Length: 443
Image 1 (tube, one colour):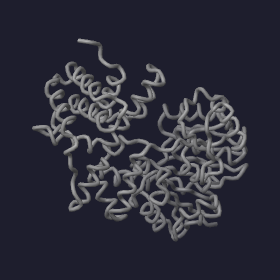
Image 2 (tube, rainbow, N blue to C red; image 1 turned 180 degrees about the vertical axis):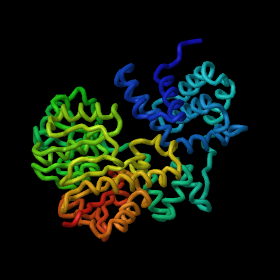
Image 3 (cartoon, rainbow, N blue to C red; image 1 turned 135 degrees about the horizontal axis):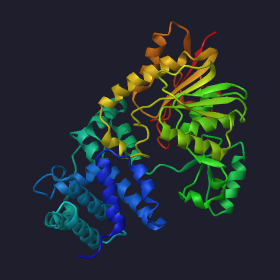
Image 4 (cartoon, one colour; image 1 turned 30 degrees about the horizontal axis):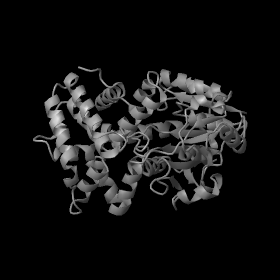
């Protein structure tokens, strides 16, 4: 038997591990060490493309299979998805290459190469006849066509309506913009933009964050001297706006209660002009290492990485506190498409209990007149406004919502509703979906 196609084999291995609960982005990062840039890009396209279109692929394959592909072994179904994605979405890949490499993989993994070969050839001959669920069942239609779990589609149709939900699902299946944040301790956005363009990297000023730049070509960061020199960090605009809502001042003492990998902690230090103290709290020792590396690279010397549990942490009183709470992550599914398959509806309520414990504990660490920003990267009210409302109802009137609009760039102020809650989803689907509330402890 000829040697297996290595990029496709690695993509298959990653898909298999993701089904077992592993994180796709971590596996992709590890993969890059063994493949050149071209093969790495192909593997990334295969893995993320399949995860973004998994239900649609399974539906299509099932039109020509005697049994649902979901019921076969994991190796076989992922081999089928791997080939079907190339056949249906990648015009540059010959069908023969997709089918032959899948059959070869099936001889080693799953041992059902005859079934794989026959089903894929049927798909090639008859894929023009495939029809999808009709408008009579909008949840099923949207779930299959845009490959999101039915429980989540049902939620969004109920909350936003069918038309708006469809737009959101569609946006989740587009690759996320590649956004960086200027390190204002070392350069300006204009200088960073000029430096990147001098090295052949296109850079466009971000629409909402004054520190943000979009890099449309998605460059190899290691090739860019501004990256090696710590002139920027990769961070979506929505996350940048959360730190601006906190509006920390030079000389203050600030707590970032859930800090790793340090994106917001370093941004806070930059806004403070590297004067004061930022206690960066994280309960995972390995993530503390990543946080420290990012801080050292950017030169944010006021950050104090601290191992601790945000639900029980005790320390000095703080002028400002950022709680970027652990959440279901449903606002970043376009960036982490595996998240739609390894999370269930129960995760929302499970996270809510943890979020409320963190907020209750950390709010007690605020000085009178201090500011807390509670934020998540999820879309669901149970983890967002409901948590804030429940906290305020039990705080004895000591805490109140503060209007964040004066601290945001003018174009981003429309993301704040009449209750003072900040949301970039669904209002700004070109950004990650974030929620934020600015809370003040009255004197």
